[in-house]
Image (cartoon, rainbow, N blue to C red; front, top):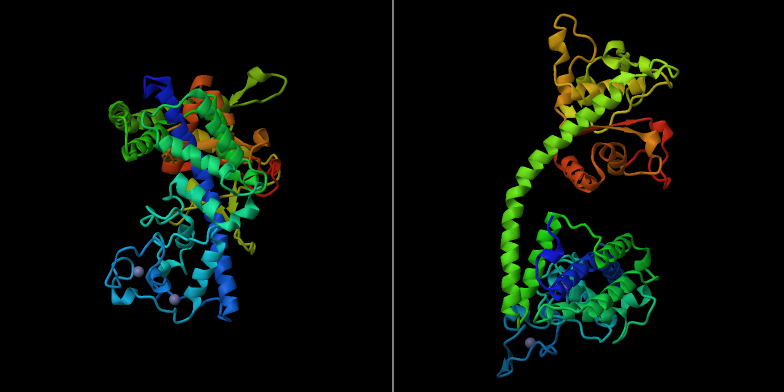
Length: 492
Ligand SMILES: [Zn+2]
Ligand SMILES: [Zn+2]
């Protein structure tokens, strides 16, 4: 797996790349926080205005464009005037200044001015027509004056923009433990962003890099709100790993990071051509290699994963202990197995219990695969054995019905189970500390199937398999599991 240190030959350039990644991580958390807060600001602005004007909560106006709401000449916008005619935003008859027919847009404009720390919203960026249904159009009034007109969401806004919203919108005064001013944690973070972008030789010394991490981590841990925010906490953990080089970066993340860094480099005004060339050469090579191995690797690795999984199940599940005193007397489950009689319980349980004797009837309603199935009975009636047999039927690709053509025993339709690329068997009593199914799978299967050094990669593969393939997850012993956080009835 390629690492950050492989891109450039110089340590100081690696530091710079590390800082790019650090900013990305911080930005991802801040962007979601700011997006949420600005949704609140937007809601509050409209609430205040509608109640002041005695308008119903559903009243909206989408007829006013930004130019209609601003007198000409608008400060810093209407510069090009000849013969008293505006050549900037008021350049057509329908873009002249006029009051909003419902007054609502004029009032919203005034609320935005009031919320702006310097009373100078960036009108050039925003489209007033969208104010009523897009909170980010209001957030854009708090961005730097230029360069953001095409940006449509918090996600599309860069780090500098996100920080600007927090610096310029007074709403954030109550969200930070410190006074927002020219020098504060936010302005420090903005400096960090600038240091990355306005860095002609793409080099950063160790001390500056350290200070960067301190600034970002301090901001993300600010006790008033960010310190309690899940995304921010996660970002802090990731930044700490990145700082000490223990962060594992997947090929996909690496590829995204490099593309971002390349964009940054290309945007820099006085970029050192040598750095850009070194980076481009690496990136080109990396992407070629990444693209060619990605698909092939996935197919190969998933085949291997499945082979290991089947071997694991066959070793672990195919024999049952006949006596605790004589473990050597284990018997084959296939030999001993007697299918339980299973009935379908309808939701309102009107007493009409329908017998079920194929996997198909258990897993499907008509053509439709069920999302969740619960198998219920007293303890010791064979639920675990049934689940085990199901897993072994998944492992064993030989069709049971072909062996016993005339008898068709219950649950002979193993082919139904073979439609699942993966069957994952979890004993809930062994994972009471977890609430996340993939973590349980890691602990109960991957850790037993893979050597320590390969587990991380196998876990990533499992996540990909579970996202892209049809998987069957069998939990045994739901009654023995309680959500450690006391919120959900089943693992998530
Ligand atoms: Zn004008
Ligand atoms: Zn209007």
